[in-house]
Length: 279
Image (cartoon, rainbow, N blue to C red; front, side, top):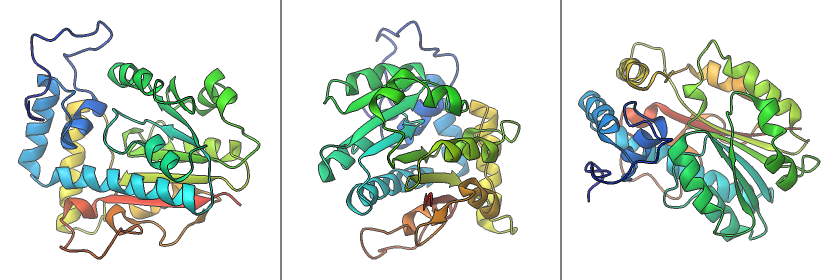
């Protein structure tokens, strides 16, 4: 079965999963080559590919950035506890696998509230006793951080890593992602790290800016969320933190694994990421 084929119509659907509405997690998984999606998600995929057939490069850039970030956090500053918000559907090289390969004692708590992600997340719990899953809304930091699994498995008196990978561009301006992140950051102990990847609009009238706005319109019409923010708006999400070099850059340029073998595509210029430390 190919990624575009997805889940067969005759496969049973869990009662908690709504197949009449596209899911951000399922659409994202489809662009990564996954198979956990339905016709409603495939329609979003097709419409997005009509805008730019290179969109899979964007999702891969975000995913590969996450892998490099987790490897850095585990090997450099020696972070051994991670809170991964909006983790999405499991794929190759999940956060706990990358981190525990470098630092086996690392504890990872995944957070999501998509029914299909929750179902797969529970399966992750069987891998080892240092991987946990929380059904919670990342837009409510206080409730999330007070969740019994978070307070039990993460020591908030020691540095940890907070991951917001390709999540905050699905938080509306009305929900104020800057204020949301300020509440998370305030709760983190000194020495903690925050990793954020986000759609970026150059806002300069360029091809990249036009493409960002087209993708934004498509996402908001299709799944109800998706905001391409400017460089300064994304940078402000790290309020009070010290950016780790090379700062906020295209995700593909954040400590790449080797020399670039081809120019970045237009969509890859929209995928930005950064890591910062709380003093």
